[in-house]
Amino acid sequence: MGLIENDITRCLGDVGPAKIGCTKQEGIGDAGHIGSSNTEGGVGDDESLSSESEHECAESIGTDHNKYFRQCYRQAGLLIPWDIPGAQPDIVSLQNANPSFFTSPVLDVGAGLGNTSIWLASKLGLDVVAVDVSADAVAEGQRRFTAASEKNCKKGEERISAKFLACDICSPLPQALTDMDSFGTVLDSAAFHCIGGPVQQRRYVEAVTSLVRPGGHLVMLAHSDNAPDYGGQSNTMRRVSKEELHGFFNTASGWTVIEIRECRYCCMSPSMPGKPPRGIACAAYLMVARRLGD
Ligand SMILES: C[S@@+](CC[C@H](N)C(=O)[O-])C[C@H]1O[C@@H](n2cnc3c(N)ncnc32)[C@H](O)[C@@H]1O
Image 1 (cartoon, rainbow, N blue to C red):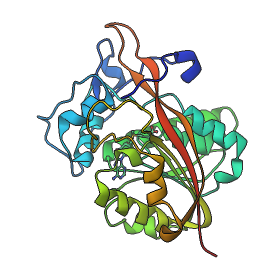
Image 2: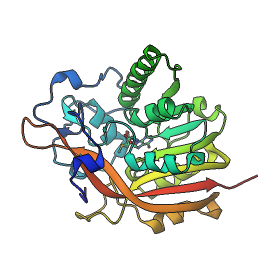
Image 3: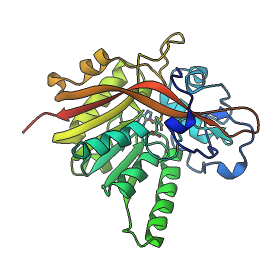
Image 4: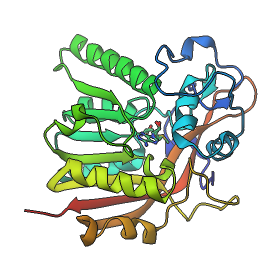
């Protein structure tokens, strides 16, 4: 993972200890583990991850990206690099400047532990559907969301609600998703750059295209080719170029790209033993595309 910034206050503000993840983190207690009761389609317990970054971590598990992510969320006592407090800061800034890019219902694709979904629902008041290939991530996202909703209620604010669904966006979509009203926005916070190879990427584009209504938006934050290349592309953490994004999202596939701007992908990284993880940022692109049609 290419680090372009190492200033925790600029990137994330004051960040407490991260709880779980794909990098073994000394000094993180069991209290932070996610539940792993659901064993949907995953891998055996004998696979373990203990490398230094999301990139190295991804390389170590091989090419099956679904297996990699399911296993990441199942490893107790590990740091999930993308488990930052709240949504990615540059997505929040984009929404502040252009609220019309974010309209209900919003599909949070590759929602992970639900941090972005909580922001969409509780800060923006949007209807949210969160999907992820890991059933463990979905269960933890649901748990965090419920906790956030109860907190809102205690403050006398409106109850928020969201649907959480375990599904692989690159496989035939479950009826529970296709039966829903089409989405005003698909928000992809660091999922596309994790999607397998060209075949899965094309399936991703087809799926997202089928789910967004004409005039709706795709907002995508993806690790960019401005980040250093540490040798080879991983199927679980690729560097995405502007050309690649234009190649996937264009008139032929049903999209017009409104903008692709440079931004930061903020993550947590292990620090010294006994110290809390630190915030880092990688070079990324933030793309906004509009769905063509009537
Ligand atoms: C880098 S994480 C980002 C998580 C979350 N969006 C965030 O910003 O915290 C990428 C997420 O995409 C999910 N993912 C990867 N491939 C997927 C697929 N084919 N279908 C659905 N989710 C997928 C992973 O399980 C993981 O939670």
